[in-house]
Image 1 (tube, rainbow over the protein chains, first blue to last red):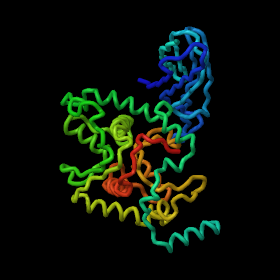
Image 2 (image 1 turned 90 degrees about the vertical axis):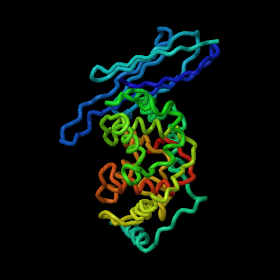
Image 3 (image 1 turned 30 degrees about the vertical axis):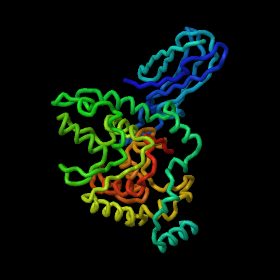
Image 4 (image 1 turned 45 degrees about the horizontal axis):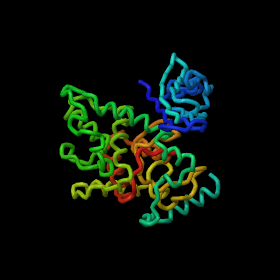
Length: 106
Length: 254
């Protein structure tokens, strides 16, 4: 079970920008390292992170081998209406984690 | 060897190490950059919280032949407040001090009748991070237990003893040359204020023993096996040395 943490403000005024913080558990194995027996450790990274706000894509990010383990991603968006934020991390070896969070817009 | 390093080593060889005056003690937190400090300060950015989440799950899970969870005996994790700051502590059954990790495993084998977790396993680190976090902001308070005295002395002796191919003692770096630079990094005072820590170099959570192992390898000395009494004695001495300093687990370190 992969742990993912998401934090947003509990409520935000319409038209105001707010910050979304996410943290996910992942080794982000680069694919460039050698293991103890000299063979290369296969790459195992998150390739893409996506966030939608009431179904509209607001943020998408390509991740690479250069990104550290347990990626922390934070970004801002403007509050339009109350609803659901949807988060999806996808990567090597069929890695896929989906989370949702509610936002109340006053 | 370059001349400056040679001169430094010569200087270190001729000086007796000086203990750090209480007013000058500082946590490694203050020797790291603002961005790493920010990571530790914000639970949302501190990757150690991913282990704490696992710890919370494990805390409530019934385990072993006894079918008991940590919560069945101890209640909420918050009941563990003030525990981590007084470990290592003397164990009656082991007749010597044991670390917090060993105490958790003792609970597993004796109370839960479950196999002990491996040292540095995700499970053990998760539980120790959860327990340690409950003592945040508490002052490090090693027990004033006369049975610990000989072990404390042994820990102090290890701290001050030269070892390894570089013939260095812990004290030479962490007391005599504290605050100076070793390559690009500031030499910290070696106060165990935030263990288990998320170390960026490890990309993972790790115990104080893992950190000590790192130093020993750096000195070209042979590290002890995880859980060795030598490590626990050293931990005991380090906690005594840091007594009264605020605990900040789970910390983030570069």
